[in-house]
Image 1 (cartoon, rainbow, N blue to C red):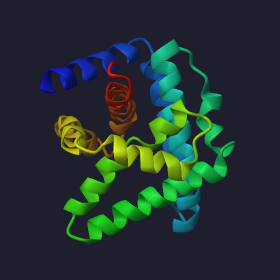
Image 2 (image 1 turned 120 degrees about the vertical axis):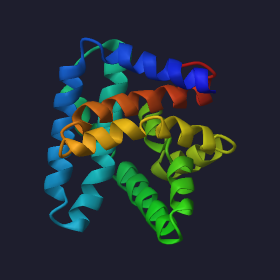
Image 3 (image 1 turned 135 degrees about the vertical axis):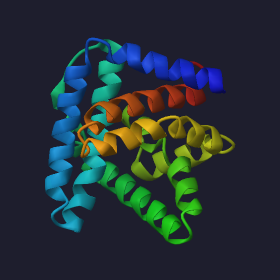
Image 4 (image 1 turned 30 degrees about the vertical axis):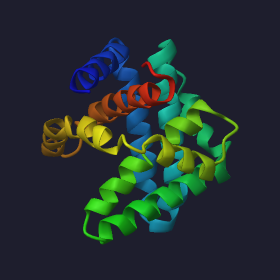
Length: 190
């Protein structure tokens, strides 16, 4: 799978080629809104799911069509209940897992990691069904997904050294790479 991971990362860079500025602006808007909402924990929980769904949908469109449609960032609010439920359950599962010695939290994050890609791919699926499908889809693939994300560890450290500014570039790169991982699992090709 190592070769496939490299190919996914390269395809993500190619998808962003010529679109880095658009992806960075979208990520900045996402981070500003979620950051502003984080002034109260409850507001952050309410906003995080719909905004993450919107960012995934935006990046999916950007990668597939190279169209910059910032309206997609807010489409999670059109499916507010589904994206809210998915975001809350995801956050709760990962938080409880982390409280139980970190490793269960990583397992939960990997197992539920395809949730918003599934929801962006299927406009009729509920948040709970997307969580279940993600968990089932990731059965036997959590380690692969962890290894794929671990490949970004040096980039994450470097982005942290820039006071977080580097995450404006790293976030879309990682999410589009994860999109290709999702498509490989779901459709057999990315």
